[in-house]
Length: 495
Image (cartoon, rainbow, N blue to C red; front, side, top):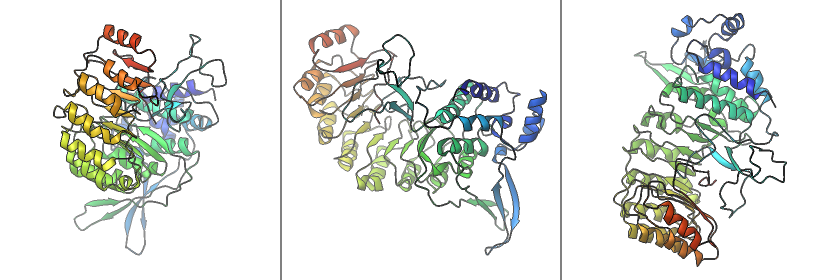
């Protein structure tokens, strides 16, 4: 489909200027009126200014009689006529079109943060098992991304299980966040319904929450979920750094039945996330299919909220880094009792900045021995190099991603020990450590025939460019790539 530019222009109109009406793009309380004003060139936001922040929820209150008595029911009203955006998105939903590199405003085609992010990205074409080679870009000096061109060898980062419609919606979210115009009126029920349509290609049954009014006239909401349709594909959604996100955002997602097809959710940096939202909405039964969840830098979360993740029974990957009100013991307790741990599928745990100690790290490793593939415990001044090497030796048969950035205990001796301790290591993050040379690490790997390619993030470490050049010359037989500057190339992404 080649109408992506038109859709992107429309999306950017919805982003700004401030007088633009997003309802005209994704639906809202006055879709018809907004479309009429848009067609006539008249922009009038006076009505929308008086709307509640959750105005995009489009509900119709009906009095119904049932066995439990009278109550108000929120019913999602379908759009009487599709918006221009809906029409264009429908044309972009085909999954038969070749995947394309994602180049959204906030997500360049590079892994310039750490080994776990961008959380919703994956390498395309999919790598074969054991292939740890870094991303390969076109060798013809162009941006040619035609997968049918056998003469051009390349890889790129794309959104997991996406199509052009999903990528465009994600780009719209990124544009909103980047421009500072993201709020609950921009992403309501109709917006998230478009996302569901883009993932599934059809409209799943709506979740209809019932509101019951008690004697004190206080309203409590209990979500009534539908049966899970396992045939629906799982999509990835990122609200990364959506600082204005609140309970209204997640209620809108709930009403749009996003949970029916949501497999990966990145809400890192969403400062409005609280224990209550995490416990009652995200872990309340409306999002039962989540496998990968990032709540990185959601600093209002505490151990109570983390404990509720026990209810996400399919969880296999978790990032709680930077949640400084969460303790290492909270993470250990969750992992020890989580259903995925008992099944041996809790494969990724990133929890940097929580103040890990050698003892706490050993407890976490003991709970995941035999299957843990990704581990992040950075920004931990209490972890020693000797303790780290000794503990991680228990994961020698599985661990292929390790992030220990800004850990003073990581020095040349400690990183050298990892060479023989972790033979399957494919990605190593040692940013901001006291490591000055990779020679010891590579020498140990040179003696192990089964090791593959190694990707190292070493910005702000003690490794100099001169030292790295000498190491490369000395160990030409060892396949590795080390980034010392800000030009990450996506080699740290492992899915």
